[in-house]
Structure formats: C-alpha cells, structure tokens
Length: 622
Ligand code: WT7
Image (cartoon, rainbow, N blue to C red; front, top):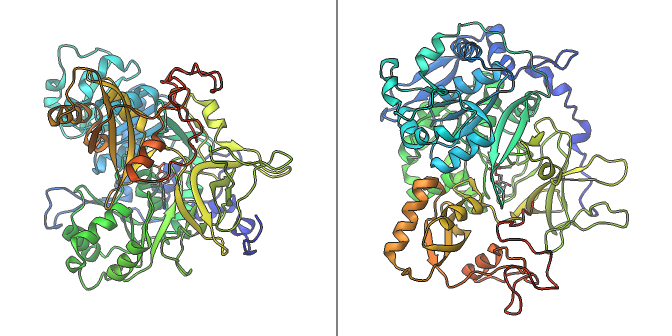
C-alpha cells in the first residue's frame, strides 16, 4: 500500500471486547454467552418486554391493516417453548435445526429457539427445489426441519429415505389433527411429524438460554462455490458483537426504532440483519410475507414510519422501473436506506436519494464475514457507486492478483497490497468476531481462504471479490474473482445448475454463466451441448427448463438456454465459463493460455498441460 491517505485507522481505536458493553456486558470469565439471552431476554430484563419485536404482515393483508405483533416478552416465551420442546425431542447441544419457510413469524421462533437451546440453526431458501434442499439437509446433518405443509409435500416428503440424520419435521400451518395425512406409506418410522402448535406445547415459557460460549457454533449458512457441493459456513455465538456493532455503526439502530429488512430469511442477510442485529438493538422489525410490490412497499415505509430500511439493489432497481410517481411525497420517519448483495450503481443511488430523500448507503459483506465489513456511513460524504470504507474494528485491503487468480508475493512470500486505483482482491485482517470458523467438513477449503501476511501481522482472509481503492480509501466493486453467479442478490453456484442439466438424457455437457440484466444484476444462462439425435429446438429448451425447475426451483434455474456445438475447455478438461461469458458479452476473454486447442484433448493427455483431471474436478478458485 503506497498512496492511500493516512486516515486514522478506525480499527486501531476499536476494541472488540468493549463492543459487548452495549449488548449486556462482556461474556463472563468462561466466555459464556448465548446470543438469544442478549437479543431477546435482555430486553425483558431491562423492562422492554412489552415493546413489539416483530410486526408481521401476512401476504393476504392487502391494506396493511391487520398486522400480528410479537412483543419481546412473547418472543422470549415462544423461543423458550421451542427450546424446551427440542430438549424433549432428545436434541443435544450442537444438533442442527433448519427452517424451510418464507417470511413468517415461525422462522424467528425456530431460529432463536434453536440457538437458545445451544443448537445450530440453518436457514434454507423456500424457493429452492428438492435437490438443493436435500443436499443442504444432508451436508448439515440436520435433525429437525421446520416447514409448511405445502413445502413438505412438494419438496421434502420424497427425500426422507435419503436423509438418515433427520428425526423430526415440524409443520407450521397444519393443525395437529391433520398431520397424519402428510405421511405416505413409505414414511420412515425414524422421522416424526408434528404441528408447530403441538411442538411448542411441549416446552414452557421460561427456558434459560443454554450455557454456550463465544466460540460455540450457533449458525450454519450454506453458500455456493464454483464447484462441487455447497459449503456450510459455521458462525459462533460471539458473532453477535459484530452484528450489534455494525447495526449501530452502519444502520444506526437504536432502541425503539422501526426497522425493515426485506431480505428473505433463507439467506444470511435474513439472519444477521433480518433478526440478530435489529433484535440486539431492541428495535421493532417489520416483516412482510408478500413479495415486492412498489405501492405496498411505499405504503409500508410511510404508514409504519420506518426509520431504517435495508434492502437489495435488485429491489431498488425494480422500484425505479415501476416509476417514482408511485412514491408518496414523504416518508415521515425514514432516515436511511441501505443496500447489500450486489453492486449498487451510482444511478440507482441517485434515484433512491431523490425518491426517499435520505442517504442511500451501499454495504459489502459475505456469508463468510457474517456481518457488514465495508460500508458507506451516515455523516460521511457518499460517493455514489462506491461501497465506502471498512467499518470500525475491520481492517480491509486489496491484494494484487496475477491474471490466473493467484496472489502476487514479495521476496518474503507475503502478499502485496494493490496500489491506489489498481484492482485487487478484497482481503480482511483475520480476527473479527463474526468471521466464519470453518466450512463444515471442508478444512482444506477453509484454510485456503487465508493467507499469511508480513511477519508479525495477523493473516488475511481472501474474499474472492475484486475491488479498487481510491486515494481516500473508499472501495469500488470491480467484480467477483470466480464464476459464481449473483442473481437478484442470491448467490448461485454454476456447477449446481450444470450438474442438473448434465443429468438430463439429452445433455452431453453444459456451461452456466451469469448474463448481465438491468434489474436482477444477472440472470442464469446455460450453454448446452446435446447428444447426437436430439434436436436443438424450442421444445427441448422448454423441457430442459422444466427439468431444472423441478429439481432446483425456479429461482435457481436458467432463464435462458442456448444450444452450442461445443464448449471451451482448459487442457485439463474444465469448462472455461469465463470464456463462455466473454464470448456471450463480446468481451476480451482475458488470459486464455490454458484454453484447450485443437492440439490438445479434454482428457488432459497434452504433455505440457497441468496434471490431468477428469472434467468433474473443476477447480475451485477462491
Ligand atoms: C457476495 C456475497 C448479502 C450480503 C451477504 C450475501 C456480493 C455483496 C456487495 C456490494 C457488490 C456485493 C459479492 C460478495 N456482494 N455485497 N455491496 N457490492 N457486490 O452474502 O450470498 O455470501 O454473497 O455478494 O460478490 O462476495 P453472499
């Protein structure tokens, strides 16, 4: 790092141990802490039990006239009941509980009830099809699943035989008398099914939080890489210090605020900022079951007097497309809008500034970082299009990369920080509280995310994202360093889509890329090579889309399919998605020195090529 102005490092003046003072005090001498004690019970102890924690609007409530309020006291009781019921069901500390639910109050009760009991909570995206659901339940060794009757019948029931760890399914919207109708003749005896109501009835209102410590696992969030199975990022109870600190430093949350985070509870934002950070601050959270609708959203923001609104670039662009004239003249309490998940371009910032009349702050983070790491902040000059700077307590930089994605090193082997305005990989100094503590069962992959720094310094976590830093130290997003696709803010592994396409009898192989889209950021586009004898026509295209939707769910399926005679491969046989993408977009493909040419073969027999690997071993570039 050479020319970056010597702004006082916020990290130098920030003490993570002291971050606990405002969230109930430091953990006791043994490091004991349970997130749920701090985000729910603490407010009851402090006399805020009657305050509304969750104000829920059902999908059918078109006039926003009939919300269901859950107070902090009620949340304490219901999460106690859930935790107690888990205990009755033989649940042990560390056991996994997953939800497969939309935005309903039971998500919060299940998640926080699990964490209260010392269990590990995993959210699953309710729009996933059976394949991604099965994979995550299996990899996470999930023992208890909370879902709806419809999702159970459509997506889970046929999987039960192949989920040996699953013991209990709790159904939120089916009466206990009707539960037996969900069983088929093939229902494995090991899996009990219960209604949510009956399940809660097995606990009681005051179950103390389990004596977990700052390092006890609390959350398991699946995230997709370039290759292979999704990875389960493990987060610990101590992560709450970062949720709380960033909830204040970036989102400016205070007791009694009304706050609305539109993230789906199936992704990490839905937990970190749709649940833990806001509850840690004692706010009233708006939860709307319905999908984006401009009129409804503007009405919600105005009538519910929302103060802080955390949403996604795709949502902002959709609102923009529907027209600013739908917006009311004022949002009486709104003081900030923030966004996360994909690049927020300068035009979107300016549009939102204008319509909402408040600062619009881009924030950057990842499943692995657990909390916001880089952000624009209130009271600072926001450069539209920039992500801002590292938040207090975080040291971030950009590291120089070679064209093939390796880090450049100095003579001592230490990575080199990129110059001002030079693109590099975003890296974070290890040691912040919400840093993931592992990828479940993938230690090597976890270790490969870290590099040692210069002697005497803590190492860096490599994010895999590319950015440049300007002379003021503000970060500007450049792109992902890998082939993973962001569509409508959701992270989709191309390999998972390719694997499903490749399983179709017509398909030899496929390559899946993100194709830029004005609203969704990217859409999923597949290039497919067919077996001889199959016609590349619209009928087959429709069949392939239906096949993907059946297995993956619509949100994860290709929106476009193009038939190709062949796909570009490396000499070792890996599909070069980067090249497919560059060709699709008419861009320079960059370094193609490893591209297989006519003289080489996809099986890697080229003597000059890298060690031969079958095409299923696609590289996992971080
Ligand atoms: C990836 C992480 C939604 C936050 C957690 C999602 C992209 C995130 C930004 C931003 C440009 C962004 C990155 C990152 N991303 N925030 N402000 N500008 N890109 O976590 O699903 O693990 O996704 O989202 O590529 O690596 P995730």
